[in-house]
Amino acid sequence: MLKPILLAVDDDAEVLNAVARDLRSRYAAEYRIVKASSGAEALQATRELKQRCAHVALFLVDERMPAMTGTEFLIEALEMYPDARRVLLTAYADTQTAITAINRIRLDHYLLKPWEPPEERLYPVVDELMRVWRAQARPTFDGIRVCGTPLSAASFATKHFLSANHVTYQWIDLETDASMRALVDSIAPGGARLPVVFFPDGTVLMQPDARELEEKAGLHTRAEQPFYDLIIVGAGPAGLGAAVYGASEGLRTLLVERNAPGGQAGSSSFIENYLGFPEGVSGADLAQRATEQAKRFGAEILTAQEVAEIRRDDPYRIVQLVDGSALRCYAVLIASGVEVRRLDVPGIDAFVGAGVYYGSALTEATTYRDQDVIVVGGANSAGQGALFFSRYARTVTILLRGQSLGQRMSQYLVDRINETANVIVCPHTVVTAAHGTAHLEAITVCDTVTGAARELPAAAMFIFIGTAPRTGMVARLVEREANGFILTGRDVMVDGQRPPGWTAERDPFLFETSVPGVFAAGDARHGSGKRVAAAVGEGSATLSMIHEYLRTV
Ligand SMILES: Cc1cc2nc3c(=O)[nH]c(=O)nc-3n(C[C@H](O)[C@H](O)[C@H](O)COP(=O)(O)OP(=O)(O)OC[C@H]3O[C@@H](n4cnc5c(N)ncnc54)[C@H](O)[C@@H]3O)c2cc1C
Image 1 (cartoon, rainbow, N blue to C red):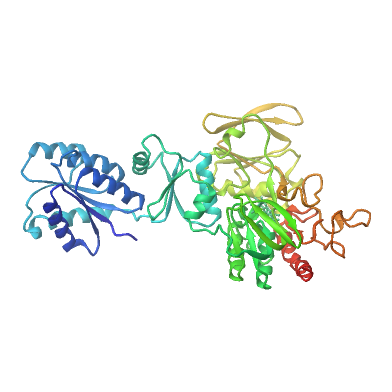
Image 2 (cartoon, helix red, strand yellow; image 1 turned 60 degrees about the horizontal axis):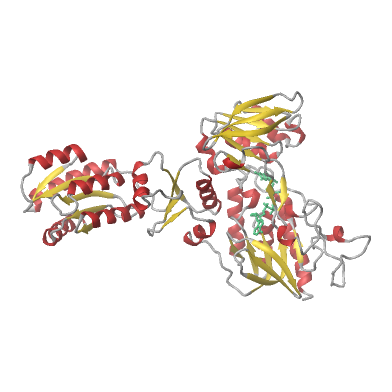
């Protein structure tokens, strides 16, 4: 942890050096002594210290400085460090100034120059102030701090990205933290673009995108090698499974992920049906374990890098990234999974990230503590989400089109929901509108049997209404079925004939697409199991086919 700061400010260089020297000789082991020769310089230093998460324990400031008096400096500095102790230095007794300062800034002490000998006139004062300060000081978090307002789409995106990438951060709600609000206002007086993210090295980013965050947080964004045996698109269970086996079997393996490792499974609050975890496992935990395992075997993982297109340049496969760069390899595995379908009702788009969330936005659960939230959907992911949010929210209302939960949800989840008092199930109900001002406040729902409409209060709505495959990057390369799922193996054969453009002297392998050397596994593949275990199994099983293919190139 950084040492707390004692900040001395005086425009007289001789006095400043003397006070800094005396402070250092007694307090250097526990505190860092910082000097500033004017109010403006001291304010700048204070801002930088706050940006770096340092604690200021004491301001020891000359009152009579040109341009900005000590009291004027303290008024601004204390907005950022309200708990710091404050001492004014003056050359002569000035009772009126002391009285004013005591009232305006709750001055702790008024110290006359010179303070010789310090053992009698300086140290007893500072010792006592530091004793009081230490008793009140809260430990500082010296990692990344994300400052924003809770119901904001951009703040949500930043928090979600960092947590999905297992980057620890501290969330600071600017509506309740006046000292950070003062810092943010002083950095961007015209109004900052929120969230503002402070890094321990002092860097400040306003409303950063995934790439900026990733670079600053030290995640991996650039491929290290010019060429790979295997490039995997998507780091969900299928992609991670393939990466573990690919790398462990000696293939130069690169995994490219547009967001963070884990995929849909990473957003699951609790996976109870995955082999080997009888007590269940959180999606984030599973994703982190798999990522570490893949890396340990030597797989390279790029995150916040989206694949735009995959092309064929025989015998190579070219993976074009959204940032314009292109990667080359022999074989590609598409493990890009699916994304949650959008709910198309009036008013909803304005609240995405501000009360409306697609999928399980686990980071937001505490924001809605003791409030009424809605879960839309009737399958397992909706059930898991409802149970998770029921631990925080006052009520969780599940809206489902069907007649009962049992139609699409596993029985163990239905049983749990029935046992949970604050979860309410509304069958044959659909959402028809979303309302609110800055964030979601209510929704209109309609009973599909009676046609009756009613309004429900809704602090948040988490939507799990089916999925669509993310396979646009191969739309011009491989055969897909009508909904966009990738066809593989037998499904690409038409009347026993190999697909058009097929060049190999064999039929496509089980998980091979209509282009030799381009494979698909997991939820993006037509006919896949749509489960974590199925995706891991397919991703791993693809490796034997990829090895076979590589023998021919
Ligand atoms: C909330 C929730 C709870 C669930 N709970 C369970 C459960 O308890 N048990 C169970 O068995 N199953 C569960 N499932 C289903 C399970 O998570 C999925 O079947 C599984 O994750 C599919 O894995 P996948 O690797 O095929 O795809 P995904 O998990 O969808 O991963 C695909 C990855 O590819 C990335 N990607 C997509 N396009 C690109 C691109 N162009 N460039 C780079 N990267 C890209 C995505 O960002 C994503 O990370 C749950 C799903 C959800 C949403």
